Image (cartoon, rainbow, N blue to C red; front, side, top):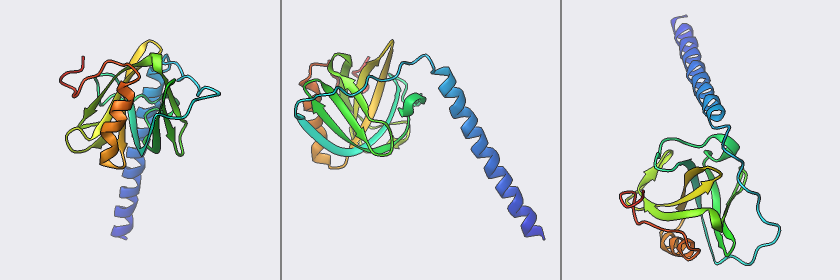
Length: 171
């Protein structure tokens, strides 16, 4: 009988914690409701300059690696392919909406150690800073193969955004 009460207590506590997480995420989405939806993928694109498979980590407010952008699925981690086109950068995500960043909205690219949801070795994440309407944001991407990281950064830099090699040099 005692173990049943204990088990019920654990289940109730776990449910309460999950409910608090859900309330927090809902509140974050409401606070960020002024952020515009990312632009849709153009109808026609040239062939990509470079592609890399990996993991889309999250999009956060620029300079605040813990402030995930909760709207439009931008804060959701997913398996993805990063594809650099002449027209911009595409994160083709599996199980989540794709993220298209037009060339004109790119603001910088750098390598980082981590962000909300993922910490890796030094300079293990490709961090793209871009303009989402009036808000500047950072999107993190972890390449599956380590030797694809630097070519991805170079391909994004070739689109023309300013860049920094680490967070200390950014902003």
